[in-house]
Each structure stands twice: as C-alpha cells, then as structure tokens.
Length: 488
Image 1 (cartoon, rainbow, N blue to C red):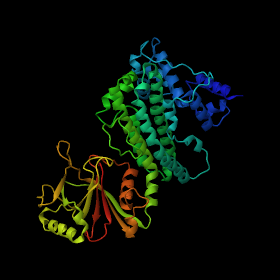
Image 2: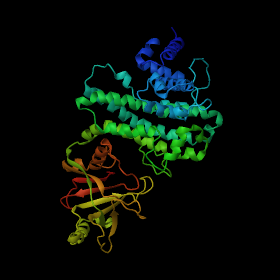
Image 3: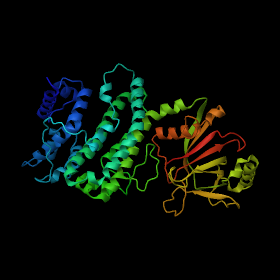
Image 4: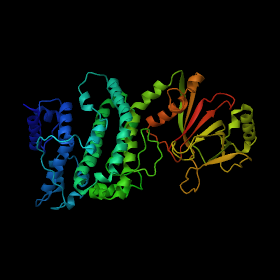
C-alpha cells in the first residue's frame, strides 16, 4: 500500500472516531508505520501535526453542533472529549474567536477534512519551513525504550541542550518573517494564521503537554528538576495569550481573538519585537511577544540541562553554599579607574570605606561591582567598580561614585538596582575558580548564573542586571564568592 493511501486511511480513521478517545498508536497503525515516523510524514504532507488536525476538526464540528436547537455546551464539550466545560470554552474561543455561548452562523470557522492531492511545485515556502526549523522533542520515540529513569531524563536534557543552540535563531527568523510586509497580504492571512497559531504556538503547547506528562512519570524517581514544571507553566500561559508583560496583553488578546488584526503593521511590531540574537542578549528597541516566547522556551531548556552543566563546570573547585538574599535599601560606594590595578591604591580605597564604620550595611565585603549601566552587552561596555555595599544614604567621599539599591524603584527617575541577589561561596583550586577558558566570563560567574537559570529564577537583564565578585578575606586575596542580580 503506498503512502498516499496509508495517510488517507489514517485520516478516514480519525474522521470516524472524532468523538472517541483515540491515540497516536491507533492512528499510525492504519498507516502501517511507527508512531514517530507517521507523525513526521503527516506533518510534512499535511502542514500540521496530528494533534492539531484532530483539535481543529473537533472544534469545527463542535461549532456546528452548537448551532443546532436545544444544544448544551456541556454536552458538546463531553462529546468532543474535553474534560471540563471550561477547557472546552477556552479552546473554542481561541479557535473561533468567540465563546461557545456566542456561536452563530457566519461567526465560526469551518475546518474541513483533509484530502491528499499530489502536485510538485517549487520547493518549500520559507514561512512554513520555519516550523520545522525548531528542534522539536521526540518523546514519543523514546517511550518503550529499556532505559532507567535517570537515562531517560539525561536524554531529555540532551535534547534541551540541542534545542537551546538551535531555537533562538529560529525565533529571530520568525520575528523577521512577521515584520516582512510582503508576507502579510490579504491572500496570505489565512495560511499565516495556520503557520503561527497552529504550526508554532499550538505545537509548542502540544510539546509542553507531552513533556509535562513524560517528566511527571519520571518525577517519583527523583531525577527531575522540579523547576521545569514552573517553566512549563509560564510558557503555557504565554502561549494561551496571557501575556506576562502588561504592555502586550491587549494586543496579544486582540490577535488571539481575531487574527486579522495582524494586517496592521503596528500590531505585528508588538507581536514580533526585535531580534535578540542566539544568546538573547542583543540590544533591542522593543521586546515583543515572540521575544517572550523565546525566553520561555529557553527557560524550559535551562531547567532541564543546566543542573548537569553546573556539576560538569565545577572542575577543581566546588560550590560550598548558595542562597538568595533580599536586603534592605543599600548604597554601593566605590570607584573605577585604571589606577586601581595597583594593590596599594586599591587598599587605600578600602581604608577610607573601613573608616566609615557607622554606615556598614551588614554585608561588609570588599567587592568588584560590575554592570553595563542598564544596557545590553552589545550596547553598553562593562564597568567595574571597587567598593562596598553600605547603608542607604551613606555620604559619598570625594572622588567616589555611588549606586543606590532600592527594593521598589519603579518611580525612581534615575538608574538604580534592586538589593535582591544570589550569593554563592566557593572553595578549591583558586586558578580553577577563576578560569576563563571554556566559560562565558569565568568559572564562578558561569556557575552562579547557571544555578539561577536552572532554578527558574529570573535574571533582570538588562535594566537591573549587575554582578559582584566578592573578596571575603579582603581585596588583597583571591575572591571566593559571587553576587548575581535576581528577581525574587
């Protein structure tokens, strides 16, 4: 039997069982293929996943049922295999743009059964190809493998590390596509809705659901980093249109309710944002909805692979302690300058601060405080200041500078930071702790940052991003601790 007939049989089976519980194994058996191979072929040929097709058909038929006299929303929801009326209403509203209670002829979408007609034309359309550029997980292909839970989790973490390397560039390409006016003519709008809402947003939700279920099976064995579930929650909220950034909520809700709003370039600008680069740290004029999805995707990946990376990065040294701190308002007082490379000049600076004993904050370490004046690393250069964290409103000696750390600085008209941070202490070989080769900055910086990322804690980049190298035994000795800004 050829593959066209196999897929046709599978589609026919789906159509006959849309009101039943059907699984991918049952459907793929009609195509005489493994579930993973069938899903790949289905997506390539049909332009959507099996799950998307089933969901679209069920919601289309559900709308037709609701148009019938005396129909009840609860009955229709149950008929099309929704666990609750609430989950059905949310899915229905996302698909049709109106809630079930307002379903009217001419106000709902019709999604007809797919059929296969083979034609050969000029290659893939670039916009649809974007969907396949994402590094999607292959959880279905892993089920049934004779592996320990630890081995299964390690394989998922390996997928996450590869996705982290590949997906950022695809999100940037997606941003570029959304802002390409030539791709948003009226005749392309319906196809673009399928690409963005079903091919990208819905497929990420489907992947998240599979990840959540698979990781929940592994969780009792203790191998799963619990932070991944928090990351999945945040990602799913964004994918459902509940924008984290209040500045985007209105426009995102508008697009989810009526995709034709994407005709407006101003709307697409807020959905797309700007390209932020593979590391997500490039300076941008506007951070849009797709940028947040890019962050959420990275958050899931970090939670999966970062804990193992942190262990591997500790070569010749170890993390003795790690904690998050919320301090009262503080003021950093210090100075930057090439002359501070001279140890005697540096020690004199700290003698001045030591003499101001009545202004000690309780966090009285010599530190090298570093930031980019609230700018992205590709815009603002690195600045390093030797000094100490003192009490708020500490008088500033002549020739010194200061930066205020304010718990709530939303109304502050000048650059401030927040006194919230991770604090890591290290021990071991000093050269290893300060090694730069193989690290983004150096070993202590990387390990501290990666613990934060692996725990799902937000680093307030770029506006309130700062770090500090800490010298518990004074600036004349090696630093053995690190402070790293965090949103707590």
